[in-house]
Structures are given as structure tokens and as C-alpha cells.
Amino acid sequence: MPETPIIWKDEELSPIRDKVYQYIKQAIVQGVYKSGERIIERELADQLNVSRTPIREALFRLESQGFVKTLPRKGVVVSKLSPEEVIEIFTILSALESLAMKLAAHKAEANHREELTQIIEEIDHALAQPNFEQEHWHFHFKINDVICRATQSPRLTQMLDGLSDYIRAFVHLGYELPGRMRKAMEEHRDLAKAVRDREAELAENFTKIHVENAKKAYLEALNKE
Image 1 (cartoon, one colour):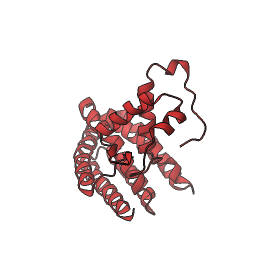
Image 2 (spheres, rainbow, N blue to C red):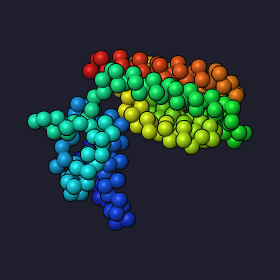
Image 3 (spheres, helix red, strand yellow):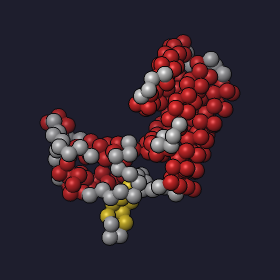
Image 4 (cartoon, rainbow, N blue to C red):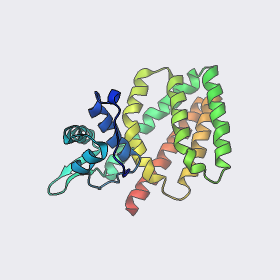
């Protein structure tokens, strides 16, 4: 966590509870707070320059979503999902993302295919750089954005959004395994190519392989903790 107190701008004070919630959730998703790590209300309140009330509200909200849990004599800690829970979520994700890729391949318009071509070129360029790891999330979000728009299915997009934060929290740990980051970028490139080229069945199969590899990487990393 940053050491210097955060100063909220006047225009940001109204939805302060939402901003506190987003701040804590992103810290969990991005791995700033690790699974099992304690979250102390007092320290967060001082850090964010707010009272403890919005901190409590945010933590209650995050607990209802499964990101944190309250333990006796320890307080609020970041949740650590069981292998069974991880498998369940990745199974759901595989089904939804496979459908999204298939729809996108069928429905992608010229502008979507042009965007994917640009992303593919950017991934190839990034993979040739020594610090390519820094670029991964950028491409992940860009591809997902194009795919969701190309599906022309708002409800499917909403369902995927509901899982996105869990998945980000998962893969952050999985990417710590040597070689997984590069492999994931290559998988995303192949997915983008298949959708761009309207290879619906190929896009669907690539998605299932990608999600399965992500699940295995996370479970392997989880076992090493």
C-alpha cells in the first residue's frame, strides 16, 4: 500500500463509499493484499483519509462478494478460495467465454476485426521486448473489450463482468509461475486471430484451452503457497 495519505478531491467526496470499495477491491485483485492477509480498518482509514464507516461498508460489501471474510480473533482477511471453488468458477468461465468467442467470430464487424489485427501486431511486438510482462494486462483488457462488443450480447457481457474480478485475482497468482505470462499472451494472440478470421470453432477451442491452462497455473501456484 502507498505510504503517503491519499487526498480526495472535493468532487470525489459524494460517492466516497464507492471509491473506497473500488480502492480496496483493486488492491485485492492486483495482489497488493494477498490471500490470508489481514486488512486493518484503522490503517486503511488513515491511509485513505476517511472515517472508518466507509471502510466498514466496503469490507462488508466485499465479504458478501467473497473477496474477504471475518475470522474470530483475527478480523477481516483476504479470502483464499478452495480448489473446489476455483474449479467451479473456471468451469463457468470456460462456458461463458467459449460462447462469447463463438458469437464474436460470427458477428464481428469490420471495425472489430481491424482492432483485433492491431492488437495482434502489438502483442507480437511486445513479446519481442525483454519487459513484455508489463504489457499483459493492457492486452487482456483490450481483447476482452473488443470481444464483448463484437458479441452484441449485453447480457453475456454482464455475466462475464461479474466474474472478471475473481479471475483477475486468480491469474495474478498464476502468472507468477515461470513462463505462464508469455504463454498466456500467446494464447490471447491466437484467440484474437481466430475471432478476426471468423474461425468460430477454432476460437471456441482456443478459449477452452486457455481457460484450462489458466486454471492449472492457478491451482499449481496455490499449492505452493
